[in-house]
Length: 122
Image 1 (tube, helix red, strand yellow):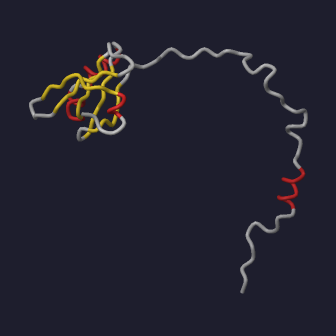
Image 2 (cartoon, one colour; image 1 turned 135 degrees about the vertical axis):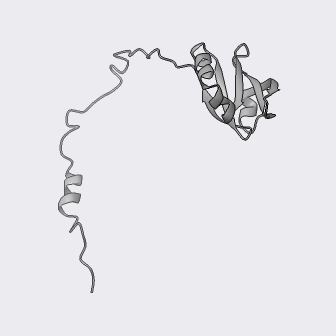
Image 3 (tube, one colour; image 1 turned 180 degrees about the vertical axis):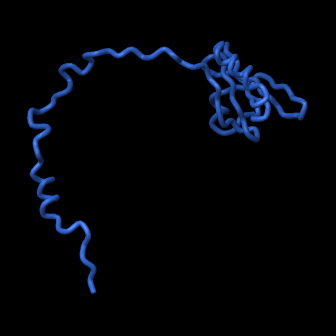
């Protein structure tokens, strides 16, 4: 029921038809079968946007499709910032003492490269 790469990632477990006959698939992520993923077309998602945002706040995922092909996903916000672990590169990164010293090759390219705009041949 899903096109292309989404067939591998999601498995359809049912669907319903809206008033216009558009199918809204209930899908389930293969990695988390206990959390169904709802698939809606754009018009349905637009009409139910507030509900979809509330669902996302409760941890549910919704896939929005255009012409039956998934194009967007509304997912819960992961607002927990990742913690910074200081000192992970200690002893692994070596900065030479002269890392900011002028490079003679680069200076030579700038000074002896000729004019920036070459003269036109007549």
